[in-house]
Image (cartoon, rainbow, N blue to C red):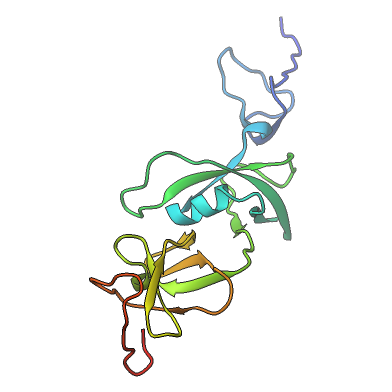
Length: 195
């Protein structure tokens, strides 16, 4: 004897694929489709470790994804979650997961998305070449009396070419190259006005 049956998901889900049609007879254990739990949907991206630290440590950081669905473009805010604790061997990037504030009907697993990450806007920042950062973490500054003095900067961001540090206010004339054997207050001579 045949009975009509209904099926309820144990979660708020969306059907991705159906393998049966209305009125079809089913057998026990037969797969009849694929669905996903909308609350578990995430986007996975990989980030440089320095950028990830900058994004996670800031309350002002924002992330959005943009997807195409039925010919329309949708941009959705997402929540940046801490990723895995490892760095991928091939890229040296860290996987990060983006969660959605709420379920949107146009989001589904396997969909291609463009990710937009906006870091915090910082005030009073100096961008210096990495070579300005000495091996002990200090930065040397030329003073108006032809001496040098050092300070340990607050590093906001760093990549292989540049370092962004918090400015100490006013104008600074920073030594842009390694300065070996220098001591605070030492008199120096600048060559052609270069660092």
